[in-house]
Image (cartoon, rainbow, N blue to C red; front, side, top):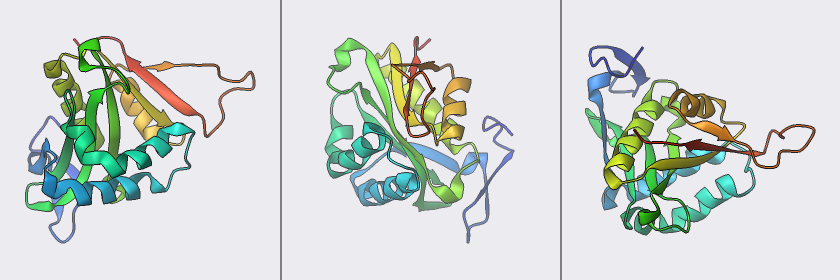
Length: 190
């Protein structure tokens, strides 16, 4: 199944609405009204994973300042929802400058890409990532960085399919641990 075919069923069961078609998936910028639901979705979405160093811990810390972070220059957070049930948030993802850098450095970061656990495996994450990459180009980012954990195998596969390469930093001689963060870089947004 490809999310590019609007007539194809993407298989998201959003009961009581039923199965959602690709054209029913809407991805828009987060609004102030979305903020409480988005923060709850992020908490629930990553709550089942072990914290891997600063990766997930930093996401939890960001929730206290989520709105202002994504209102800052060079940043935006997108929300995926079913057009037929717009109050139901299926997922979200953000883009912004790599922590501590100005957007003028042209190095962006995908952050807080989370799909509601009930909606995973249906192409929503791929559509959110594409929307973030398209926005990153418009914002002038030339390279994109992201972090995940080794437990997020489907996310890691998604990033590699979209041109990201793993960046290794000082893995132990015995190999990476299951809780070791995974770093990825997209060298060129072209």
